[in-house]
Image 1 (cartoon, helix red, strand yellow):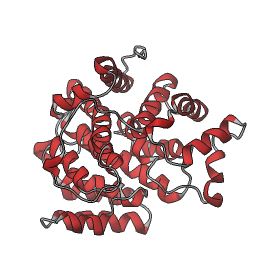
Image 2 (cartoon, rainbow, N blue to C red; image 1 turned 60 degrees about the vertical axis):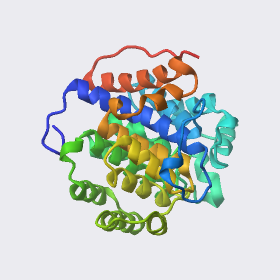
Image 3 (cartoon, rainbow, N blue to C red; image 1 turned 90 degrees about the vertical axis):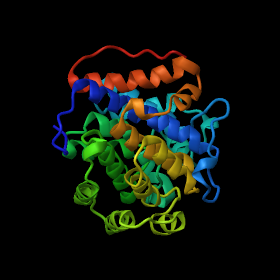
Length: 323
């Protein structure tokens, strides 16, 4: 039963799981061409040629692969999966490659990230950007979701604000799974996120999301109040706002890109939430068909989502990489 009071059928749940992971990839790949640029008009975004995704999707795939292979979280396996999938051409930030090198050198998977930034750890959005599979698999178990999000984050991010950002993003995905477009209560949605949030930083940003939704906020005000940077607290609330301030998957992703800044990650996180809410059928076919590696590539991402769905509905089969 969703928070809206509507029964979610197994087929609708499958659509939401697939929409979420395809939404990650599509938002990421569309936003990548605009990363670092100032705000633009959303209508300028056009699909030309192949859409190549970045580390956001690459690491999301790794999270899903490891969860599926282990039937849940296994930190050592997930860390090794990240290392195996690592492709420096995907635009990884400076932290994860260093963590990967330390783990390969023998530092335990749950201690390597603590060495970053003088022992403070990273509060970037690298944990939040890949957390969507956790939001799907534990969408109806908020306490477990929060704990698994923390564990998944800790492989590369140990700063409390980086970890909390990932937990909030995962819960935003979970709430999107449990709601339907025709009955979404935005106030209730934000309140549930506020109930999960702990730090004044995120609570303040989520309150700002609530206030911005009450007005027709210009992009400049959204960026000023919520941010559009690589810090988790300057991007996770922004992704949540872009989802809640729009009516369709396409509008949400285009609005996220139009805000400028870290467009690939904000659009990817927005795509995860919007895809989980609206479902697979809401994503423009031209966007899906333009994803790299052709039909095999997009089918692999879809199959990962469907296997997570099978785990939730206890229907199992193996997913094989097509490339």
